[in-house]
Image 1 (tube, protein in one colour):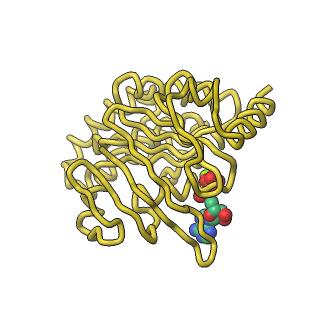
Image 2 (cartoon, rainbow, N blue to C red):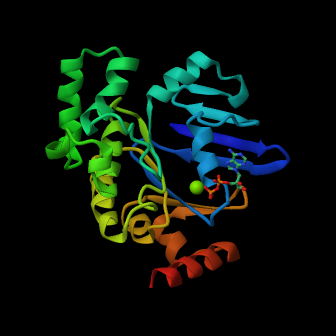
Length: 247
Ligand SMILES: Nc1ncnc2c1ncn2[C@@H]1O[C@H](COP(=O)(O)OP(=O)(O)O)[C@@H](O)[C@H]1O
Ligand SMILES: [Mg+2]
């Protein structure tokens, strides 16, 4: 339902994405792994139009179009169908947790405040944050902030949710609570693209793993296959390094 073909992105003379092909089907969870600087963040940002790609074809449900020809109006509509969770939470600091969730609903979607609150409470409950609905980000732990950010990403009932290293900025003891919320979402059938270094999560929760290196998808396949029996030398090297690091 969401995909790109031959996606290219450069920053000046630095070609960061060198022809990426990618597809995710409804209900699928795909983990994107790869070394730092390989283009994972840029890839997610191009998929969600936070960054402008230089060329490629973009597919979303019935839309199949040159990515550079997608209109502002189409981008706006597409972005309503996506949720995005950032490494550093990116909550609005001057708003409570619940206000962070309702803001998009009331301001962008023009949903009445009371309806938006009902929706937000349901979502905060889902991520275990209902009892902290009226706390400001500074009064919350990183894990709590990230769970609130996940609730916010779900506010529009997105067709796909993208996570960019959602646990990388967290103290180790807070990682589990965020991963367990994500696991629950996955079990409910949420379509998710997750850039992560959490190999246990990738193994247990993701249907598929995409390994990126140097702006290209080097290898992809069912999670178990890629982790247990990687074909490419680059994948083997990366997994060896990251698994050593984990010990
Ligand atoms: N906004 C930007 N302007 C210039 N260069 C960027 C920008 N964002 C990313 N890059 C460059 O793109 C490359 C890939 O970065 P990134 O997508 O963040 O990789 P990853 O998420 O895999 O670590 C890096 O060389 C980085 O310096
Ligand atoms: Mg990144």
